[in-house]
Length: 154
Image (cartoon, rainbow, N blue to C red; front, side, top):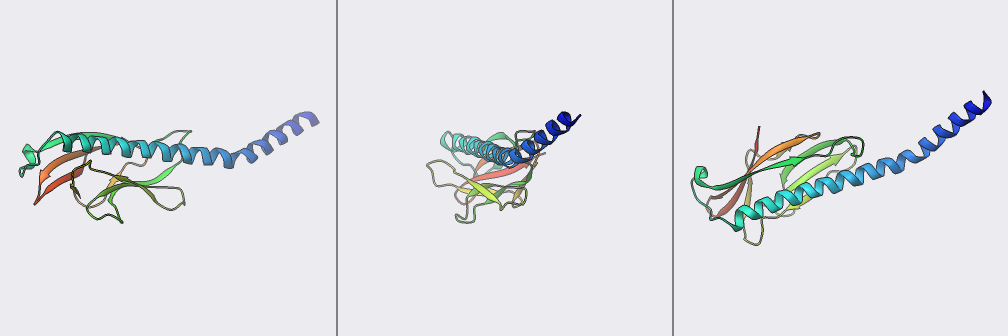
């Protein structure tokens, strides 16, 4: 009986000692996956810009839809907020901002390719689902100059 109690106590102590490392690994994995989603969105925007010409009529504009997935499950940290926002250090550009737990908000800038193109987030910051997938529409319009218009679908 004493052996069983000691075995359980040692197992609990080992688990408690390893939890900070597990949490760090989950946060790192989540950051890497969100960064990969920002890269996918940037590539989709670059594809629309590089193969098209901006037009004034949004119905005729080149567009694509991108599914942005926020990681979930045991290997991912709990994400409190994910949103497409205007980059604070580069007005007219976008960033994918996220916050894990009580940590400060971080962001990944989203480029528009080699062409100088403004970014418009329809309706201001676009909140994404913190635990799943969100569908994003990207349109290339002429709004007084080449502009990438980003909106959430559904």
